[in-house]
Image (cartoon, rainbow, N blue to C red; front, side, top):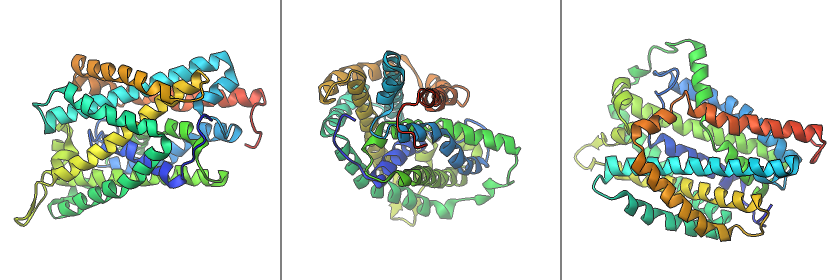
Amino acid sequence: MIENVQISPKQLILLVVISRLVITITFFPALDGPPGNQDSWISTLLSIPIQLFLTIPIYLLWKRFPNQSLIEYSQTTLGKAGKIIGLLYVLYFLHALSVFLFQWNAFLTTAVMPETPVLFLLISLLPFCAYAVLKGIEVIARLAEFFAPLIFIGIIISFLLLTKDMDLQVFTPFMEESFMSIFLGALVISCRTSEILIFAMLLPYLNAKKKKVQLVFISSYSILAFFWIICTITVFATLGLDLTRILQFSYFTAIRQVSVGDFIERIESISLAIWILSGFLRITLYYYVIVQGLCQAFNLKSYKSFVIPTLTIILPLALSQVLQSNVVELNEFLSYKIEPLYNLIFIFFVPSMLFSIAVIRKQGENKV
């Protein structure tokens, strides 16, 4: 472990939840995979045990190597080949960050500020993220602790203000599709949870007894499912399924429908504030993981020397994504046929391989 820092279980939970939740309130990918109907909320509930199952290799590796991150125990297990694995994970995080920056800009330039140049948005955002990364994971974790009440309360208030306009009949008939379709939907949701790898990078910094780590996983996935269902009810019951399917930013559109009397209207600014805070935290978190991963891959003592050079990579990479791609191409990659399989390799199969090798070679603490 490079840094002598610690974060609390609550901070780690909030980092993971907020980082994942921002995807829901941006593109709301609830109907682009099975079951593709009103039963999506059931898939969300079923995703909790599947996410826990996918986390097992990461958990078992952490028990064997409690003071090492994913990048470090890859090298411990495989030697020089492990360094290649570690760099592949750095590239994975870099790709995930560039995709989200595309989403960030697509949302702002399409729904909020269509006349604003993309370069201006990136230059306005990334230096602040770099500053937060320089301050370290403890500061980032405290930001999550500070942002969380604002984000969660904002989502709940938006939901409550829309209750009078909701038609809950949209959720009938119950289980219209087969159970297998609902299960596949839960599997897709779980495989999209790349934050499982955030656990793999940050668990060495966790200030908690080993027995409590399982509660961190359960709490993270349960809270995430709760707010996902809140967002699902908000969108489905307000807009209906047909309109939700064709809208690019359906959650933002639903929030714009709020009208209570003649004095509470146009509260999409609340949604925008929630989205900006969540997005900033996600970008900063992945930025931190990238530079920390580079530091660990090259066995250096401090990651801070990588912060500015990495910024010079992230900025043109994100800009090229924006200029050379479009939302249709992005949605094609993020579809349930491509992204979950891509994530599954890094989330489950590679960690499973590393754990199997560690067991065969009797490496690490034999306490599993």
